[in-house]
Length: 337
Image (cartoon, rainbow, N blue to C red; front, side, top):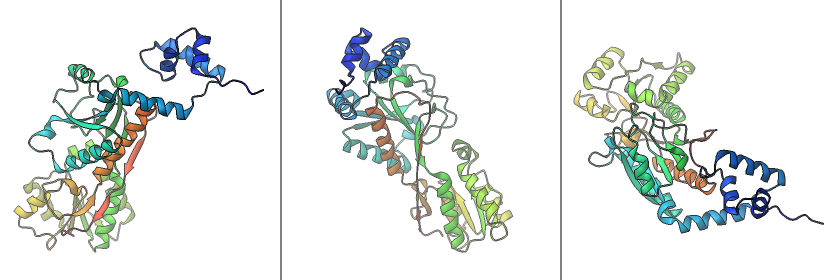
């Protein structure tokens, strides 16, 4: 005779608690004391309880519809320095991706500007609590920003990009390393043989030296065929003039938005005098720069999909095992190579 399926109700009767308590404990809800959660989880496991994935999905959907005003909002956290005037172009791409994918999944998106002292301001938690926020996407923060002082266990959270305020959240970002390799292959295929790299030291540190690592890899592999010049870690016009005079690059790779303006000010023609390859074309000051389009809208969309799946599983806080999703960029021919 086939045994009866073990249900939450049967576990609750065995444990001497309510069905709601068992349901919350099995989802590791912090409202249930840790020791009680462990006892109920051990009991359920011993009884052979297994959730029904279809019923679980239906329950999550019903809860989200009932609590739409709270659970149906994605809060996109950015640093206040990024909201002075209009949002920078690269950030507009991210916001557009988050909004578009969010709408298709039933969410609305609110951009929330973190003050410069947001990492220390405990009022942030109260603000988010009173707004009923449960879903966070944490945008790029300045390197100097301390870890954000948020009660992460209350939120389903995903980060975009590397930054000091991220306490080990699941992460979506462009594939900086592979994008740089792609760019360099296009540059070398174009006949350039004296390649230089211009970036601010802060940018390199903030993104864990992914671009520099790719540059040095190609330098090691292509030694003898192509000259890879010492990087310039300052992007001002005068420093750029001196570096070009000393090393005579025929092509420059950069992440700095203003390099094309500096070259124009120095009366260095693109691409006649030197080629320019931007590794993040969304942030370049040149309207038709050659380089890597990072697909930041896709980054934003993927962050929403990851957050949505975490929310359906009721996963909150910093995970034990962090996942990273890397989004490939695309080469743009432009007019500077």
